[in-house]
Figure 1: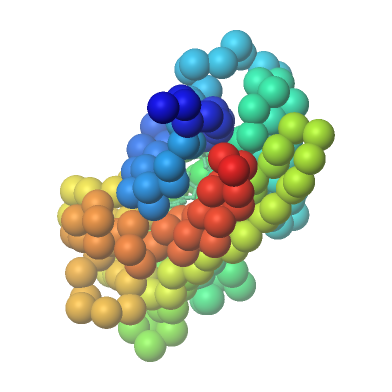
Figure 2 (figure 1 turned 30 degrees about the vertical axis):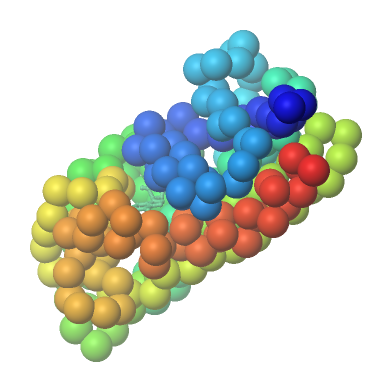
Length: 206
Ligand SMILES: O=P(O)(O)OP(=O)(O)OP(=O)(O)OC[C@H]1O[C@@H](n2cnc3c(O)ncnc32)[C@H](O)[C@@H]1O
Ligand SMILES: [Mg+2]
């Protein structure tokens, strides 16, 4: 029997916990013949600063950088938290809201402090993920997933990452950090965005 062709796809993220989610969602979508490759499996390359005005712009830049450097189709996510009472901030600044990139505890504490006077009925928020797929010399696609909810008064739960302990998705009142990984993937902004890319990934194989 002839060997089935395998397409290698780079999943480009420097955030280990986000990368785990990206890989988990793509793997559980079960696209046959796609092998996911991490940034640690390709030579290092210079990365453009994430200074775009939108999640979509940043996701495309990350995926273009990865595709051009590795010569592989590349998936990248740019995501963040939009808080109604903060006029949709931190938004694209979510990773560095308190000043230091990736300091989840400080970022979360700052959002809680900024909302300390905001009553329960005005604590609405949403997570947003833009996921881009770029094929070297070929197609580019960027899709968006959102996850509506509200901001809790204090952190709860140990799962997930980033703002998950203070984000309460619409539903049963648990924080995103209190959901199982499968529950988070099924509802999350990232899960919803990546689901839209599954047909494009499947098309790479045929
Ligand atoms: O750019 P890469 O390398 O992928 O990793 P990053 O951590 O810098 O990621 P972003 O630039 O997309 O910034 C997203 C920030 O938004 C927050 N965030 C995104 N998705 C989240 C999620 O599912 N749960 C909690 N916080 C999330 C988290 O604080 C991230 O640092
Ligand atoms: Mg980033």
